[in-house]
Length: 360
Image (cartoon, rainbow, N blue to C red; front, side):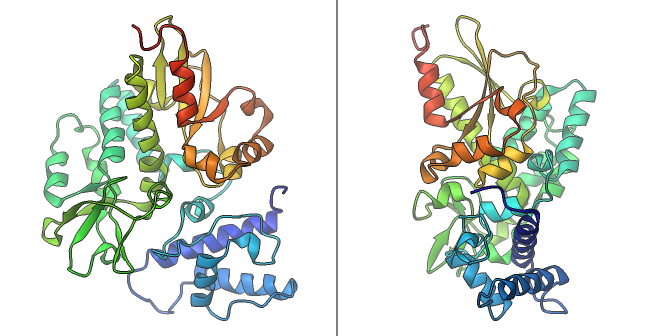
């Protein structure tokens, strides 16, 4: 199908923003629903009436609809085939959070732009790429910290330049993540906090939900004051960052030289082969290939590379067979011409097939 018309995009954005707003409110306010939620609901009802479709009778009914049917199934001509609400956790899906962001916004994926751009600016001015790499790796590998761990990091020498940013991105865990016993559970797959669901636990990230039942990595008592990265950080930094870390491990295992976030995050991974060939890699984990295509900037030229790859998790390509085609269709031609999209397995196999790799 073609790109949604502007009014369709506006409605998807408003609905996604409303669902995110609902998920982040710990207690009802006055009025019960925010103006944002009420406006999204009213506009959806209007769209249903115009399309002669029975509208959801209430906001809770709208949430149930979003958890059981993709917008493309609502009879409104909305071109989005992913659920906006996860049926188990009743929280916004990755696709929902992607549509929540203002668009078009090439910097949106860098998350809460002020934080990441502040980190980059400080590290550039101090000529300290190591501090940025340490900060970025922390956000990927440790999305949950205890209060004591956060306090320790505030005095960490390696993070000295950026320590004051940590309280802005690591917030106290909410009651929504607290289990029946009053404690919390950390996901074995991504390291984020799980949500209690149906007598067990469920992860909020598509990466883990797509693998089946949630696996508890460890328990965390409320007395330890757990803190977790903000939701946008988890989606746009931790999520794709886990792909980057996977690539680092797999490519290093081939005996290749791997540099993470080179030249202050010019791109995500720089791979150097024995013959001097360099591959540049940007890793993305986006549910909607169209949003990825529309917000993707041209590849950065420096540090110099021979080939540039856009790598997405294998599950994005296998879960939606037209993912690549949708990306190509909506990507600017001058950007698409400079890169190769592939999955993690395909990229690693291509690297392993090069002469002398693994035999150095």
